[in-house]
Amino acid sequence: MKTVEEIKKYREMNVEQLQALILEMKKELAMSTLKIKAGKLSNSAIISKTRKNLARALTILSQKETE
Image 1 (spheres, rainbow, N blue to C red):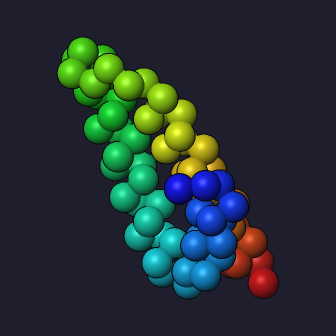
Image 2: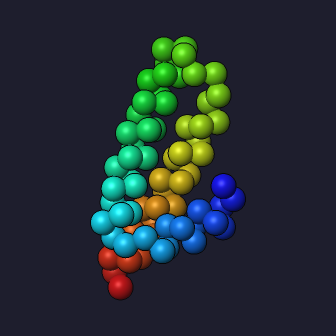
């Protein structure tokens, strides 16, 4: 998914949905990190993509909470 589309999707979500998505992203990041360390995941780009998407979602959540 393109970055602009992801940002639009995140902005359309309410606070509860964003919090659930952030929790899911954190779990996915932790699992991917463990798989990389165990040698079971060869595509390490997943970690950086997940980390960037997590930061985007956290930023939008912060903006929504200050509104």
